[in-house]
Length: 607
Ligand SMILES: *[C@@H]1O[C@H](CO)[C@@H](O)[C@H](O)[C@H]1NC(C)=O
Ligand SMILES: *[C@@H]1O[C@H](CO)[C@@H](O)[C@H](O)[C@H]1NC(C)=O
Image (tube, rainbow, N blue to C red; front, side):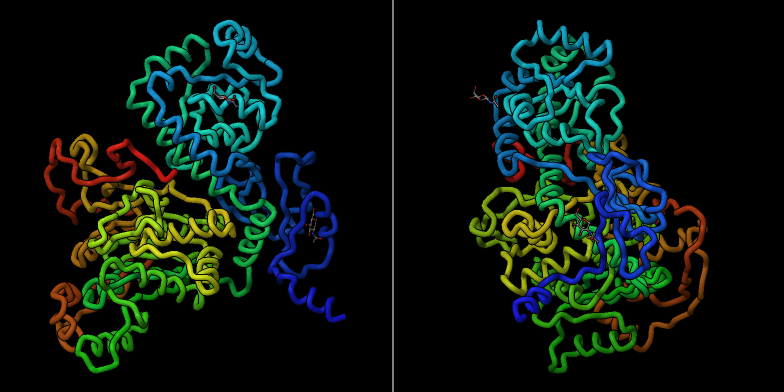
């Protein structure tokens, strides 16, 4: 009896009931209770989704892109696919070996993977030709890993002539190819080319296929191109490895639970927003409160500024901060943390706070020097998977600092590689709340290894959860990078060669490194363009609390005078170039760095 009771007690309580093709009919017509989720994959499923399922289920999880795009959530539909990443850690080793191999070897390393039956004239022609011209490097696919391992392991490129016959988004053969660090050659109009931001750099596209053409491509591709392929393949490899790391049934369960969590009544907010702010940044906080922060409220999104802890002895600054909090009621002081860079400790404290205090679907973290267009960011979050998600502008080549006197120092025992694991740059990032809670849970039971740099540390915690503790998978949602203006200026590669990394454009959602004056200017432009409608107009004097704040931060002055509020409108986002100063180009002197960084031994990701 006791045994039974214990058993019952340890069964995890799920907010969802999960069905699949074997038992979905049990749910049809049954009375409604808890949230019901149906898993209905295209692969391995003989029948199309039954019509009755649309009514009977609250959540439908599928890899059918006719119903819901890759990584997306739309209505009841959530995208999730079951694929193998069979090589595991060996995949990184292989990619590394290939990259380090002599150029000549790489140029010769092309294989061709043919479908089991050549069902079109061009495939029959290709089959005949490879038998003659490449007798040692063509393979007939039988769907087994062994065949694919032979086709990919010792080759740098592989023409995947079987793709039209290998269903699924993404096809398993494509994953197998990338897992081997092999660059896929894709022929014709392949269905889908942006699995991640770097996918299109990690494959060679041919309009049509001939063996001669393929060989000549290999022999004449510039060394630079081979380098880009090799690096992009490593990034894409890591993407898929992380996405498929955890056993599928557990991933499915988590995705179903999180999708069902989003449907609770009353509905949990889409996101909880944390804005990291240093104590003296009064002007920035006021600028945000006067511009885009009120829009979050319109969307039902709670937010807080996160600051270092105050001292209870009566220092003037801390008492002014307490009064600021009492007035605006939107600040959290994290006891035991400081504002001194790098603020890894503060970042963890904020994350733990959110894990314990918010029931939102996502955690959204911003710096306090941003101009944000909230509805554009929120509509992205509303349209993507609710679990295992890490969103932002990613750095795949963050350099580790080994100088022990540097505040950013990371000891080799903590992280031995010269490059950090992928992380979303700290200005603006999001995580699905399952991950926030998982980090908190792990940290509280068995502390995680720490890196001092705040944004890197989130990537590192997640890395530990995936690879050291094996408690989750992760999807690096890096496809929105163009919507980040990391440098608040207006330029193009033509006007500012090699000096125009993520500038302001018509597609910008988030602008980094902007002062209170610029934030106010941008907001006014968005009101003028009808993107926002004018709301209350307030006229203020520089007196009282404002005057006291201005003693610490002169940018507080921008909060005096007449301040025009705004609310959600229906016009287009404004052109923001008039608010920023775009310095002249610096030919031959690249100032920014992004993406891949080169070491003396060549570019490297962690291996
Ligand atoms: C439906 O069947 C699957 C196994 O195929 C099982 O995991 C799941 O719990 C079943 N769902 C219900 C509600 O019985
Ligand atoms: C790759 O090449 C090595 C050395 O030639 C060989 O020993 C190995 O069996 C090959 N691997 C596969 C999968 O064909």
